[in-house]
Image (cartoon, rainbow, N blue to C red; front, side):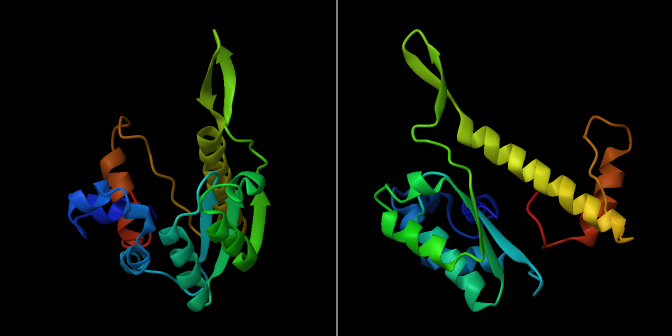
Length: 175
């Protein structure tokens, strides 16, 4: 789930996503939730390494109200020091599980002639998502379930292969 999906998929006008207060709109949490078909066994994983916006906290609260587990992957020392510190503390308190990545702010790791570059939080977030995908795939296979893997679009037959997998999960994921 990404809050910008509301605009990308036409659920709100694109101009709304450009509003400086877009992430502070708690009402968008329900709209985002309603875009997806959730299963009672689903958990909500929130990745927050800088700000915990109002809509993020509202989404977590909504998941909890619906009896879903909330897992927060964050840099705790960073998120509790921003202008959204109150939201961050509340999010951490309601989380069923927490993973603290301990990424310092600013998260720039390379110095090029006195200029700090290379945001590590984005890289770690992508690695975490890929690792989680691998673990879920492994668990499904080990339990005897079919677990499809999407192919790169440059492979012959990828469109048909990917469509057959995606059709099984229509409404359950973001692509």
